[in-house]
Image (cartoon, rainbow, N blue to C red; front, side, top):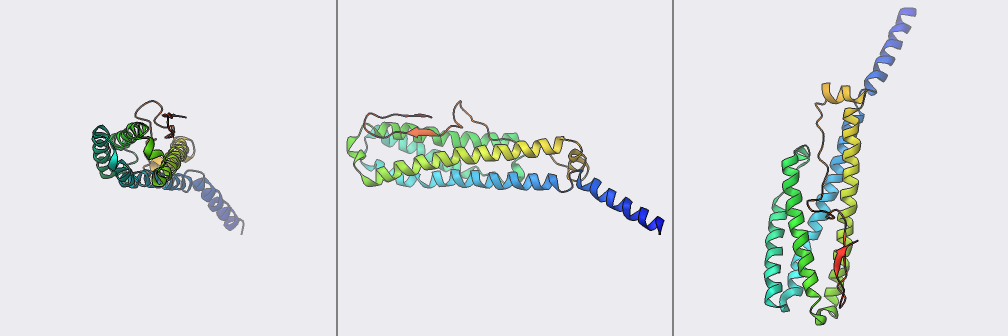
Length: 205
């Protein structure tokens, strides 16, 4: 009886030891980061979906704005063609390619919208006002989802490096650090304030 009790005790201790070695915590942290990345991708996709509406608003703009619009449309095509799966979140090069594509689209949108301020007639168009509100909200959502993803990546990367979770991370899961989302240009992680009223400006918060 004592031997059986001792065996049960050893099993219980071993189970607790395994639980403390990243068996569950590592995949949980990984899945959380992947879920946050899905939010980032959705936010960028929703911004890309607004580009056709911008093109419609720009229909009456001058030739200079049409040239910028062409750049925006091309940047949108590139941004939507660069996709990262959750298996790519450990690859710095693929992450950098995605970041560069999204940064190019964001910069083009900023230039286009800033130029629209020269057209007072646009300010009175209801669709334009709605678009302004949508873009402001979407840029803010992008900023929030990137912040949440980076925090999830920080927690995951800390988990796989910290004892005793690092034991399960390396021996059982073969875990590799995930790549945080970094701004390609200074301030790119900050949502721009789109002030499209007459005399306004487009600038970072």
